[in-house]
Image (cartoon, rainbow, N blue to C red; front, side, top):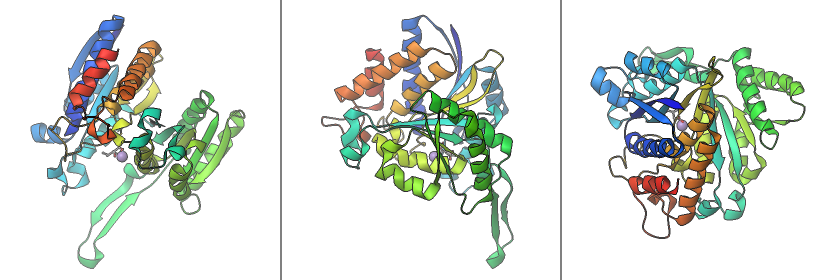
Length: 360
Ligand code: IPM
Ligand code: MN
């Protein structure tokens, strides 16, 4: 099979983890006889430095042409005080919108071999296996009006959270379908005791559940969900939520997985005529400027995102499983980066990547 992939390393550790993820891709292509065609593009802070825009037109064009896009991370401290429209993060929001990838799937698993990496008690975390389905192209991240106006005590900032029934329905269907392939339990998370957006969300999700009688649906308020995630994480199977709640809850999920460096994600959009999903694959973590350039970052979130790409964008289930098995074997062998607090000397980013390649 020919795999046309766009790589957007981005900023900070994004470049380091995507380098390892690409090595894993090459290894898979070599072993299973696929032809890899890789393009590279600019996104985020590096794109602002080189072109003045966090998402240059060329990048948007390359992403539209590729079968799938692999992304590292964006964000550089020198833009911390820049207005949102001129920040690296705008590049990420832009590429998600351009591709229309409305469903962000963030699996959270507690690996048996990593239980001690979590600050939570082993018996609480053991068996955690959930997937957070985060709506990705709507809500307060994109709503208008937005901005800061006026000055002095009257200076005022505004953001807008808005959802249409159609936006809620398509993400909810995705979550119901996923639940069907798993343990058939769906937890829809909202703040319907306060927000109108959440009231519509709950009504639409509840309405759809008649079409999925085999899936057990519960509604959980987001504040309670935040608590349940650390008190009783094994009760969750599929967690469905809007954009900002999903952003926040998935970082909390990282505590269950042992490190945010472990979490992969797949952002998928409408199906192409070929039947394949439009897909953007990125680790959940950010650019981590504090450890950038030190070859210390955990590449497993990025490598896990490659496995997701093989499965969702190319339908290569066996290849995806091979990457997952290799990661499991490396984790069990203890050849892991410092964030996972290994018993022996920690591996570098590139050593961890090499270990996965060898295990494939
Ligand atoms: C994430 C990140 C992004 C988000 C930032 C970098 C814009 O935190 O993917 O979780 O908020 O979506
Ligand atoms: Mn986030």
